[in-house]
Length: 200
Image (cartoon, rainbow, N blue to C red; front, side, top):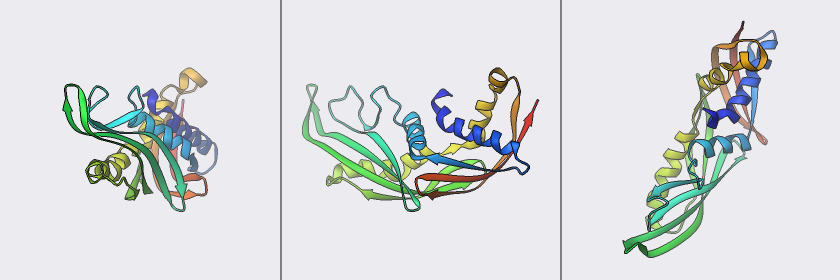
């Protein structure tokens, strides 16, 4: 899908460069902005750029997260989100209760397995002071968000390479991909893998 092209493009370019070398090993350096675009495309993909944990854009009472920002701190990937909530009871189209506007942070360890770019050991770094809001935020931050950042790198590369004959005149196809490690190094997420390509 076009919504996943930014990260897919990085992976495919790396695979093409790796194929030009004598060894099949490749190294991909992924910026925090690339991860952020992937997260926005896969989770915060409503017209308003929000993810609703309760309610919807038409609800009087709601809880949503928006404005995700990704950064790297030591060996962890940190995701910062803004949250807005109207908690209470909907009466005659209005939410009678409290309004909250806060921020939340979760950090994760990058994890490469076979063909999948994933994340583990989610740790909530910052929550709101509202117990009711946190009841919704905790499962979103430590389960939903890391799950939605997971990407099958081989599928994305095959998707982009399927159009290679139109753009290059050559038919590139991915024959194998094995991710070995994925670690934070400064301001990049560094992915080491072995890849095999056919060119027709």
